[in-house]
Amino acid sequence: MSAPLVAETSTKLKPTPAVTVGPFYPPQPMGLPFFGAKPLSPLPEGNDLTIGPGGKQSEGEKISLSGRVMNTAGQVLPGIRVEIWQVDARGHYVVEKAADKDPGFAGYGAVSTDAAGRYTFTTIRPQGYARYGGLIKRAAHIHLRVSGAGLTPFATEVWFAGAPGNERDSFVSRIDDPQLRDRMLVRLSKLEGGHPSGTFDVVVPDA
Image 1 (tube, rainbow, N blue to C red):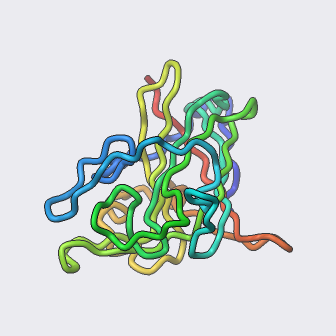
Image 2: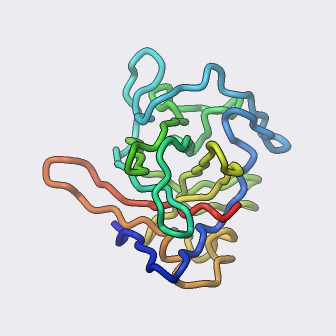
């Protein structure tokens, strides 16, 4: 897990780098040529992506992802909507058509931050994937989007320390600031009697 972010009185926190929602954002997927996509409807609400329709359990290793949403002054933001989505254990997004998807993986979740600005999800450890016969290669990641009163909707990605392909991933490698890149890398730790967990705090840019 990464260390909690704390803003000093006279120092602003650097905003979390923005990353596109990509072509497979479940509410409004664009898809890609040769990879059609259909909006997810109804959208599942809740923080457990490992339970699919009909109560089916997902494939893959369960993990917990939690963190806080705050502004650049370090003030936590309650009541903010946090959405996450990712590929399943077979490497497919839930909105992809004609894909051999895991029927037990919800693929998308959404919650509101609590009074302390915190959110928590249960999902699976993501894997990297390739498209276009390997022309596009992505390291393991989870998409994350925040929105709420007074905020411009903001999307980013959660990456994982030590994941194969991080250095070759065009989104990871474009973050030149070593401190910001380190903040984007979640370090999973195993809780006794539980599954691996990691922390990802989000600092939204000033309006």
